[in-house]
Image (cartoon, rainbow, N blue to C red; front, top):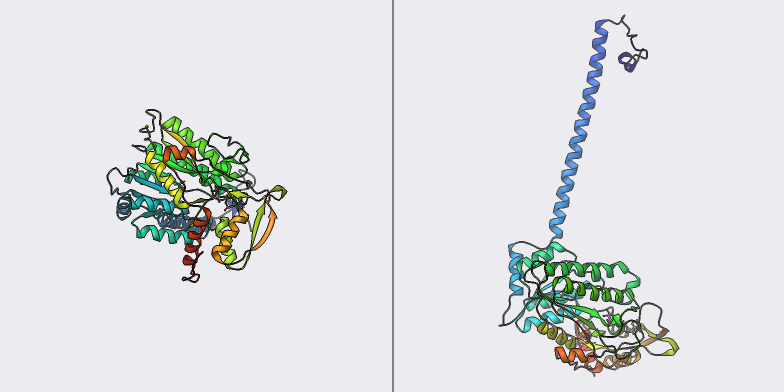
Length: 432
Ligand SMILES: O=C(O)[C@H]1O[C@H](OP(=O)(O)OP(=O)(O)OC[C@H]2O[C@@H](n3ccc(=O)[nH]c3=O)[C@H](O)[C@@H]2O)[C@H](O)[C@@H](O)[C@H]1O
């Protein structure tokens, strides 16, 4: 029996089988039509299925977008405005990025306490225990400071915030911190300290009036500099870590925005800041945790058995330096993204001016904790660390009125007291 294909498309053109009856042709035609219509129905069904899948997918996408965007709406704007409301004459409205971070929390509280408007922004990433960040957030909330959960790379969010509030100042503290972690996760440093910084500066330069920007650079920019103490005019072109390199890049990037757009910029080179509500990744914090838990600590030592040293700086002193910087920051001059005149570009060391070795730090902690550390002393691995830091703060003293007042012994006593209370170690225990 000839196939349907044979019937309709004869192999030799012109040789149609004329002996076929009319009925036969009709039957074949119906069979063919029935099969084509089935195919047509199947095709329709498949198209409908694909369309409904796609619309379901877009519903899910827009739903998750909606859920992910934890900002926006009338109630949210009310909270943002109220938090940023200035409550003293001559006060400022400050956007604090990284507000749930260590320095961000302290600076936000100090600003709020003196009547400035403060709005926090933080992405609550999990570089270290996010529950500590949430606890800091609760502390800030209890003082009337609202924290927007979002990333400095989110240009839409930043535009919205500047739309809702005419910030006079931005205190930019959001960053990927930590010197040694840069070897583990290099892209996080580029994401926050370079790309995020640029996104933030773009928002600042586009808004009208432009805010003055004060931001956290780092003592690490001095890198392999051996001239002590470190002065702002010393060379900073030999970074020892990617962290340092991104902070140095930040200094160059902010300079560009100052030069092209007239943004007022103050960069602060913080020297190993410590204190209550601190960062668990830092040595004084992790040493305390390990000593209390009876676990060993690793103490790095430099070449030729030389102890490493840091110009450890207490958080309250850093806060004074930050507020002094905000108070003395000249105005940005640009508007509508255009520069109207020269604006200040400043960089200051905020250190303590008295370096202490890491073994001495451990000794102080042992005394305050009344416990001995199990020390594992090893040669400093090539992980981005520098052997010592030591700040010359004469510029900050002259221009900001910065005078650090807390030595390491006193500052660590306050830290240990906070640590024992926060983590629920015998509340009544006195700290020497
Ligand atoms: O001033 C800065 O700009 C930076 O300060 C801080 O970096 P650092 O000065 O390296 O502080 P931190 O880690 O506490 O190590 C302190 C000392 O302990 C040594 N150290 C560290 C860990 C360890 O397990 N053992 C050890 O001996 C270590 O070798 C070092 O000698 C901030 O983290 C950083 O974000 C940045 O702000």
